[in-house]
Image 1 (cartoon, rainbow, N blue to C red):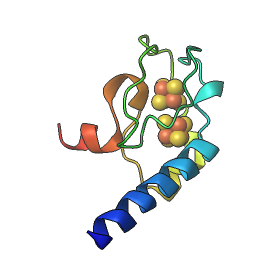
Image 2: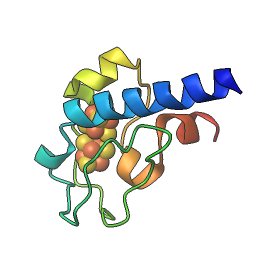
Image 3: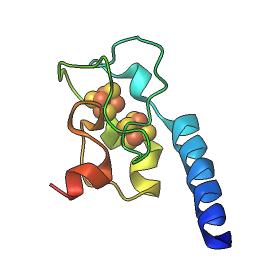
Length: 86
Ligand code: SF4
Ligand code: SF4
């Protein structure tokens, strides 16, 4: 149980880090609906309001390097984990 607590705390910390670095709101595909980005992160995943892919700037986001992301368009296609599992 202790391990579970540590890992969920860890996930929360990672999520906060991702959100603090996310550049999605500068992206041409961004749609404003009160979301904070971080769609690449597995506990966030797809956007509820971004529907049209009009370019993705994840490639220039510091999170890409830090988390070694291999995918793009997380807002419409799902988190890194979700797309990797496809
Ligand atoms: S990689 Fe993309 S979705 Fe993930 S934090 Fe950066 S800009 Fe946001
Ligand atoms: S995941 Fe990519 S396409 Fe979607 S808003 Fe973020 S930068 Fe833009």
